[in-house]
Image 1: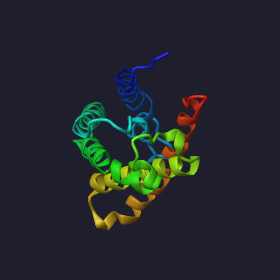
Image 2: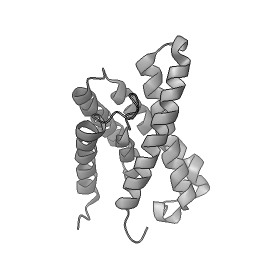
Image 3: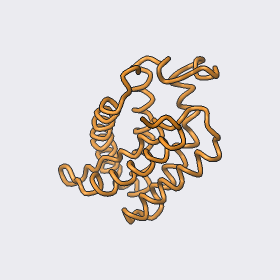
Image 4: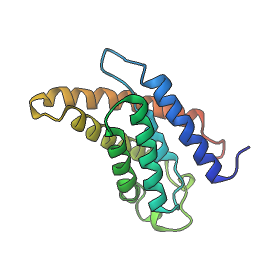
Length: 169
């Protein structure tokens, strides 16, 4: 269907913004859980692409979500941070295999991919809620939001990645 990686990336970029802004920003489980599924962009982004372009596109992703969510650049900061730490996380999760040119997600085990996704989500939520609340007096609220929102985001992301996985993965 779509084979050009640039077109696939653009479609994912637009769809993740729309899904986050139109659906998940309007969900409010138990009064404080809003899944942040746009983290899938960092999971699905091609591995061997220009890093400066990736950081720029990540900033735009966060900026568009901030504009539609009225969150004062929190998503932009988190997105830039995730784009910056992604290679380190990949090296941590996939080990020495990541350094070879022939590495793809197909070469990785399911546990390695799930660990990578979980770490992306955890870093995203720790940064986002720490910056959003910005008070050590509310550390229990921060931890509660991180725990429950990370869990719900992780479940939804696993469902979405399973739903949109290619048959040969």
